[in-house]
Length: 430
Image 1 (cartoon, helix red, strand yellow):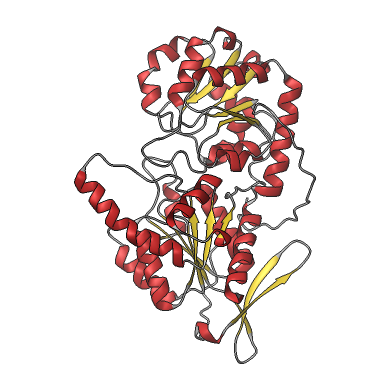
Image 2 (image 1 turned 180 degrees about the vertical axis):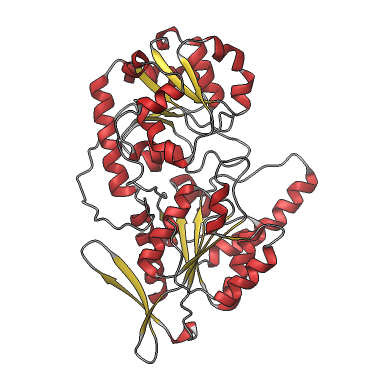
């Protein structure tokens, strides 16, 4: 499916529930006029918004935009595609994929800014001279370099802030270096043209920096809700993972991501292994991550625990749709930011799944009233929430419908791109 297929978004009423709590090739059209001679306009139609630049000679051209992210994730490619539909040419810069994620092909869609190609990317960016840049990370050295260069060449800056807690270091040297770097980070955030916090904790983090409250906009990113949508259960995928037909008729609880401490997997593992009332639930977890390796022998001995290997992007929507419940048990991190904006939660909600998440980082802002929020770092709370949803199929269906509605109205990448352009336009005219 093309990343650039347009479709209208039908706004629907959000069902409020209380519970305990492709990247297409960009057209290489260079606008031969200085940025100071442009006036930014936004034209609206029934279901689209288009940003254009009016030159002094009266002609209109699309605005040039750029995006930088330290690592490439699927949702970012969809976001860049949506941004391009609304604005025109968009160049995406990144260091590449993170770790061993199976997305090597995505590097063909970006201009790499890694150690080997950093200076080439910076030169390309300076020559491109975009009207606006969206920085999907605000504190890495590379993002700070893009920010400084943007100020020099007159490019407007939009900072997306996911951090939600100051980092602490045991080493005196590291603390000193972090304090020095933080001076630049604070200056950067205070002088950005647009500040977007992905969550309320991120907004509080910016306020502690001294950023003006009226300049901070809370808005989580989204996903491609056309790809991630409710679908029938794939018996082919289920069979490849060892799930039987009986398993598919049981309640399937899914965890997506690296099965690690940071993602709260240890607390989910304890809930699975120590809660007899969850024996009737089928668990589907990834066969990678430090916590999985720690408990691999116990999991292998359990008849209701299945694992899955790294899957390609085309299979991920089908994986979500094998489940009835998706659990996002991210831990509360005292030494730095807790889980910022977990993509697994956004994608699960777009697929219409009942979701359980902890009250950390960006999870409450993403979930809203469309899921079950629980205490972090608590295996008992996880077990109780799964048990309650396992016993109430009607509630699972209501929560799933509510999650899909929220994805359509608040977690659509095209709406995210549109809001960013609207905020930039307002800042330009302020």
